[in-house]
Length: 105
Image 1 (tube, rainbow, N blue to C red):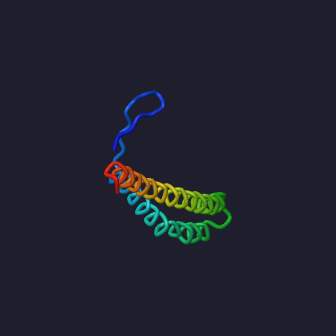
Image 2 (cartoon, one colour):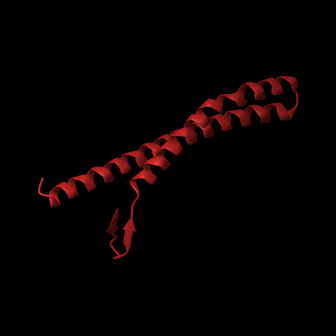
Image 3 (cartoon, rainbow, N blue to C red):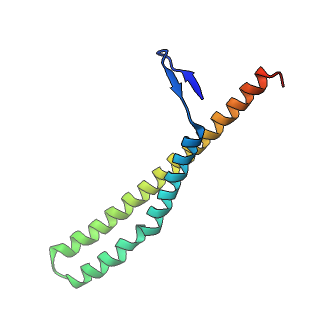
């Protein structure tokens, strides 16, 4: 699909590519969610073995920060994937409506 942006340039949109990118983002979200909890127990076990060392506290802090960042990444991937899929559906629906209007349906 093609259109013109405010500067007069042609804009090409491929709804299938948008939908594919959305699916990929949602697939990556699932990967992040499925692996996010793995660091906490490992860091806790390592920190327990390093009692009294500054490294123990640093490992615990690292695991907490990693968990927060993983959650934020999963949320953003989910939002982006959903938005891309919705945009693809909207482009398809608009194209179908425009075609129907030109054909007098």
